[in-house]
Length: 262
Length: 305
Image (tube, rainbow over all chains, first blue to last red; front, side, top):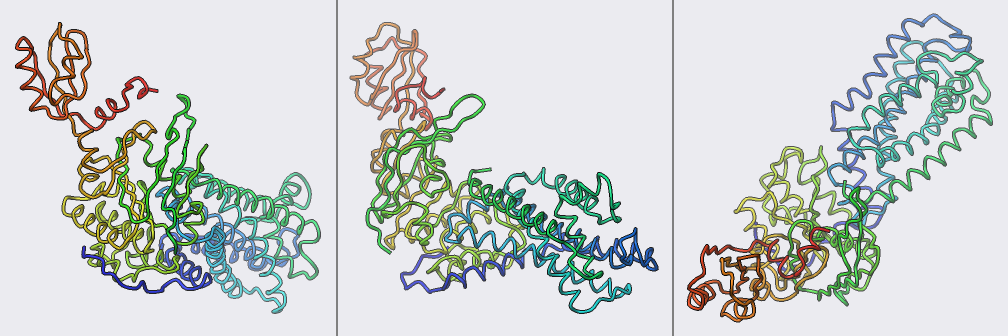
């Protein structure tokens, strides 16, 4: 180590916008460098999709949905990949908490809002990678929609992921690294099943009623854009909005309280 | 950046609940640190040093009392980029190399040091391209120091910074810290090594069981805690007379034996043997910090609560 010279400090941070952008860039870089994580989280839905879409390639009305097998499962697995991407942000937060990094960040001028925004943007970038991969695979499997309907569907999916972004932050601040793995495994599997990712839910009965209460159900329902009209309806919008607001509030509170040494 | 008022902790109090009942971590302490001072917070483990630092940094809310950092609340001083800290526990986030991590932290501050210069200062240039998850304990500590320093803070807080560093690493670390302090910066470091407090601080605040038990220049504190004890079997001696012996600062009886706390144990043992040739089973021991604290607080029972 050498002695500190006395000189004028060089300005490096600049505006608030600039400092947040640099932080976000490194946050993204870190996430994309975790190859094993990236490979699994993008690879699994893709491989599963190719298998199940090939098997249902000639079904024009899968389980009475009016949708083709490749289209239905494309959106089903986009929902799965998107949920996983968002919720796995929680695992990254838990890992940072375990090493005490969240305390180090809090004694910097980075505003909490910018910290959370970086986490959410990272989740959306991962989810978008998954969406793009599955759209390409879907097109290869014969999914064909007018451009407007692709856009409308994507729009609904991005909105439908908001509750999962909030849930990721919430569990990241509530659960330990040890607990979050199993919690994510069970949680995502259950949400995916009740949302109709693995197969279309029956149009009546308990599964249908429970499914409609969950945000994952409405994610999968985005595929109904293909049939024209509004796939969510008032009920879908309200369900997604309520989950978003409640989970965002809880996430904010968990974040605010979580300054203690772990 | 104005440094008016320095650091002021007023009647600061923090109690935790635990399964064994409440833990009084910090019991109403008052500390004032002038801008530009280098102060050591010295005390054994569990003295309340880290809790005090947490409250100083705004990471924990005091149950009572106030903190002012350059006349502001901790959160405001932190938001202004006036504070850099190396916390006691903490590893680094993974998947970035050392240079990237230091640059990431630098980007959060209004007027940081140059990243390359900081790497040199902290002796981590050779490992600048290494991923953070592949560093040794000592290297990690140096990177954590770089993270605290790169913000070029007015107040630098270091909580047990040299843990996991080897001798060479410690020497370099303290040299950098002193050079930083020499630029008029305020430094507060917590340690449980008397030698570190003595060598590197202008002033030592001695803490035990959540209280401040002494506050003064290092030489004074060293006299207080650098003491030794003489224990001897001496059934019929008067404590008053023993306390009056040269070099002795305190005496207490434990059954047949007496224990003398000495500022100068050489003078004390000579005087003791001259005055009480019948003394037997004599032991002279260096008082550890913990023992010295107990004597200073004068209440061994309280230590157990």
